[in-house]
Length: 273
Picture 1 (spheres, rainbow, N blue to C red):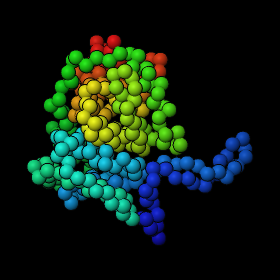
Picture 2 (picture 1 turned 90 degrees about the vertical axis):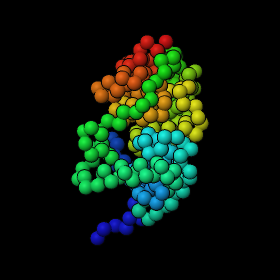
Picture 3 (picture 1 turned 30 degrees about the vertical axis):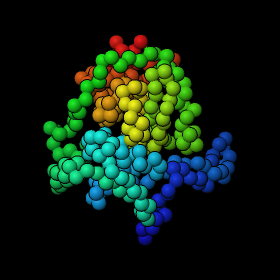
């Protein structure tokens, strides 16, 4: 018998579970704090577009950042309203977007019909696999090495959900002096970045700071910061080769293996002072 879907859904970003911990040949019953992931449906003008497994918080930032980074809208003002509905089997995020953008989205959905697999979601051919944006970073944006080190020292202290569960990624928005202004966490690294992009889009401060991600820097992560108009991405882990090539093509500063005392610059080394 299949369990009830309602038993699988949580409205909180973490929960406590009774577990058995084995240490030094002794078994101990304890309460463990565990990160939650929930199916989150992105619904535009009444039509479901995508379902993401995500931490169930900051969902208004999530839908805005997702809409911008996926090219569903071009400006925050094209998202008219958001409503969140808790269902038995997940969470629905209802977004109302402009008629023009909705027509474009429906055209994209028609092109997706009939596909049996999805490596790059929303893509039906190699020609459409890489969504290269029009934005090119302005060369005058420069960053001081000390501001990067300062933010890397601070970021761990601000990862509340990671401290509790040990299971989440974070993306942080950092000003040019190295102060972390906004930090978003999620079980998915792309989700955390989309939530952050949504939050900074509301702040209207794009281009004046940079992003730190606690994950690797894949092509999708670089593509998202390019679309958002962010001139530098700092990753705790490694970048991919495609991410490096795209960063260099668009003039994005890309840093990997970032630690409080060292990092590797893969693109834009002349703009890190």
